Image (cartoon, rainbow, N blue to C red; front, side):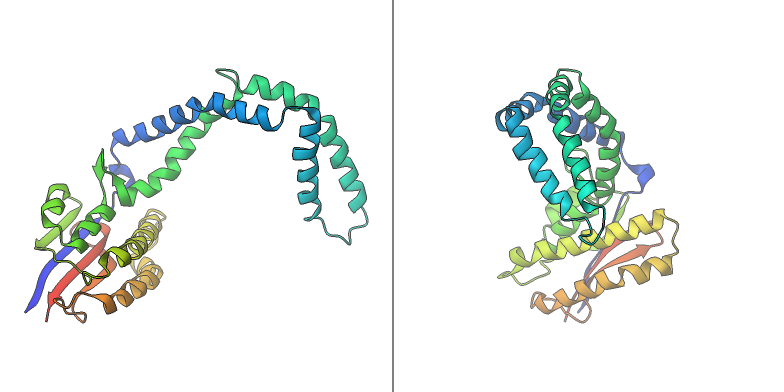
Amino acid sequence: MGTVFEGWFGAFKVEEIPSTFQAIADDWANTFKGKRQKIIDNLSRVINSEEDYLSKIVDRSNKEYESYINPNREDKDDIMIKRKVKMALGKNDYFTNRESAFQEGGDFEKGIDQAKDKFYENVLRILICTGDKDKAWSAIPKVRYALLGKDDLLSEVLDSKDSVTGTPQRYFKASIVRNILPAVISVCNRGLYVAVMADEAGMTQSEIEAIVAKYNSKLAEFNALIDDALDPNNSKIEIAFNSSLNRWCVHIVEATP
């Protein structure tokens, strides 16, 4: 009968990320700071004396460090002696600095504040493809709805990053869809992420297509499990560029025999 559904689900561009996403970094920092007392309590319980410091930090650390030194080095013993002495001498500094670091407003909290921007930068790369259900949706959750044939839920979250025609049907056989879907979504997510990052890096469309080819090959393999109501030869899931949307997308085509 031909194509019954076609969907292009686009990722955010960096400049399109809503300012509300910044709250994710704020929540991370506040949550981490809220564990300050629990962390110092646990540290104090495990490392409660100089003996604990020497046996649980110094000795274990030195054994691990020694395994990385070329055993044939002539100065191996000198290196280890210096390290053992320095670490043993550091026991007083460890306890003094630990207590001050975990005071309210101390180095622990300052370190979190300094790391917050880097955390946000890293998580932003994930949000570009997944979005946040409480703030703004991106491609991947919509792909899941489409592959499950949940048109009512999908229609509620579509926006200008997407293009849809027809009504989605369940893509995979009912008996295995719940088991196979996480693997399919994972490949879609990884492939779209790579495409978006390569695009941001200034790579050409043909260069990016060559990169995502391996993800598309993997997605094509999943067609062996396609629902009997769909045509495996004319249905597909792929990472592709949509010139009308001017963005990389997860592209789904559902066709019937």
